[in-house]
Image (cartoon, rainbow, N blue to C red; front, side, top):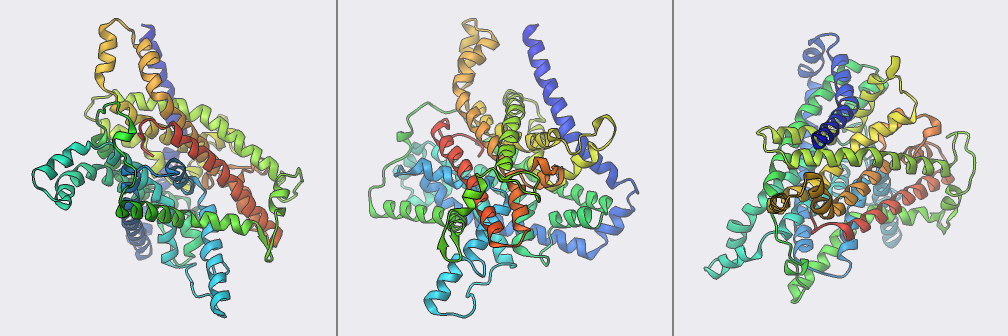
Length: 551
């Protein structure tokens, strides 16, 4: 009875959390969207060629971004899965840093690298004595696609390389012994086994790029409007909230389909494993081809990280001179009438919100993981996709949902720090879920069954068997949740008050002000945010259990 009560209250807390932070805001958006009936839906969206073009462009750029990311990410996933080379864990951890950076920081790094006055254009102009920048990428579709590849690259590396590394090499070796050449063995044996993980990664990348906001808005310009940009414009500038809600509904319907595909195929990639040393799967590069592949992988990761590297270089330069004034101003306890808080206070706010997010998101992610991991119900795939819904709803849409839902009566939380933490937690908890769920599903059932036969209670099984195996993945999810909270921008921009300014919001405010000193502080604070995230993900690689995890 005590155990039943523990499970009951755990699921009850999860339901309360999901209703307050996910269900209630979504229902509020839907209620506002259809307050004037279906007339808005038909006349404003489905019969308007502009919004149909926006939908087509959004789908096209997401599809192109997904294919390009796979093209670049799959070779890197192969190298990470099959070779042991110097700095592998550090390199793999660094690939995740762009993914948790605010899109504003990625766009800023892209401008610092490939902008009209970026490092590459400046170098080319100086070398070849050109009067105009040779690379004009900003405000083009190429900038959007390249930035998306850099942003989503780690999804392919983590999901596909994890599946690839855990494939039994004896299966392909048996095919080679029976006469199949390397290509046929890969095409008929390895590729079908990898296909679920590739489809899962593709679905996740499509969902993220389909709801991309900051990258499209900053690098694409006004001429490249996506659904997300249109939602923001209708709600924030034109104040047409019902029409914005209709577009948000269409966006959610499409992304939940891809989240369902992702959830279903991730289940297929989860198989029981034998606890063998990692050295049994990976090998040290021997021949020239192996060494060239590893060298090419270093180069690919360097290219992916190049915008962030350019951002660091640019933060140390002012009018051609090396300076650390931007960092000095950040860590000085200066007042700022524009922000109402000092830059140091903005950093403190981000750290506090991150800690509170971890306290809320990690337990919810663990409960969700056990609910899905132990479920055998036919609707498990739908439940999985429903729990992943926050990843399919943009931060801007989520922020507007919170503003509408918690803006009156006893639920009036507008302007409080609580609403920011709630938004961060619902955005972050799927990362905790995806960190522990593959390990849960891969645990051999015989471990628990043997403990039950020997008389162990379910609570004792959790403490003595589940927790020792899961603790690493829980720490991985914790770091993910903290990093996601640190980098969250869209919802925080809508929900915060000046005294609750966070690092991403401060970066945005600095960029909106003229002057070299403001630009330097924006770049310097971006570097601080990057360094904290990089430290966390390098730590993750040393804690990850057998390289398992959804991210």
